[in-house]
Length: 254
Image (cartoon, rainbow, N blue to C red):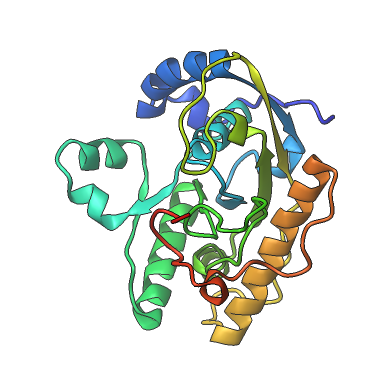
């Protein structure tokens, strides 16, 4: 197992709203789960990055955030633009450096990705983007097909995409299930992988076919990491909700 490297990055040495959040979240999460982080050396110690995790529980973002913080980086997520208009919630999200993302057409999505990448690069910040967009619909919790947001941002700013997989969070909170406290200190594993080399030219607008191919590459790497954690072979093809009469967003109906 790769040992966690504790880094004194500027994100953790300079007081930020993350310190207050960490003071509350870290002890609570430490009681609920024992998080084992592997491959932490693949997360850049400084500079921008796009972290791409699998998503199968409403609680797994907390686990990814804690693992990222323990590696010396402030965990920032892309959040729905509408949340930033909610009183108090929007103020908190901005204070934590979260990045608003809107559901737009392909043309405006490209412009939004460029703006977000420029912001990340200028501040040397990283962002966590869930490529699936919602909890996986795959029956056995393997990653389903992804959306292109993570790739768009990475290509627009020549920012590395770091795949990551978690496993064990379903014992704390199953997909659309109830939160489980007991027993305390449930084991959860988090594995970071090497950056995904995308066959796309930085700064150029990729074609839809190129976005699909690059996103498939990222999802395959995430699935591979998850397969290593589970000791199983991931499906050769990603689950497509549309082919199974499922919506890609919203609560999964039984």
